[in-house]
Figure 1 (tube, rainbow, N blue to C red):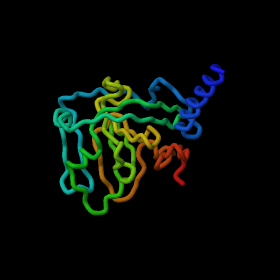
Figure 2: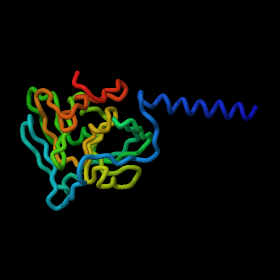
Figure 3: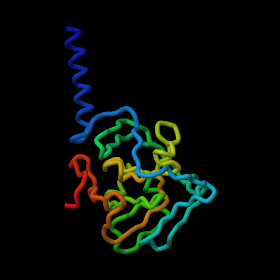
Figure 4: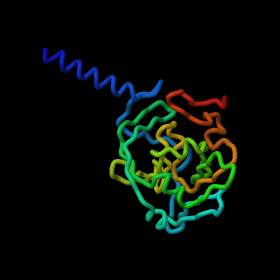
Length: 203
């Protein structure tokens, strides 16, 4: 009887985990390192973060100014287009809502391009970008994220495939209409919803 109870509870836990995995994903407890090219070398003394494009007045922050913005922590799952999923990590950083307090969008802004080191970029609709759980992060599970994972700053958009959470973030450009970012130019999907398996293709 005890064995059957244990097996039932185990199956319940397995099902609970399975329910959180989008189609085609597998669970990992490690955080795989995936990127194209070399990890950039960052000088925090000259590092800056820019908000521009369709805004009334562009804003540029130094690293010290950015670190003074209000911070928070969220727990969220992430799903990589290469099929791994990482559950229940704690992510710390600055909420997108706090960043948006620094600018006033101009009329016609519908999308944002996240610009990163080495010319990397990632496009998002404003609807996807402005969700409450989205942040600009630099800490995971209480530890600074490693350079290979995007330090000193990474976009965090957990409801989309993780390539949309651009590493080594340097700025946000607000746009009228959409255009492909770095990986989208190579055939990745323009939105990237893991629950719809929007891995590639522009259709």
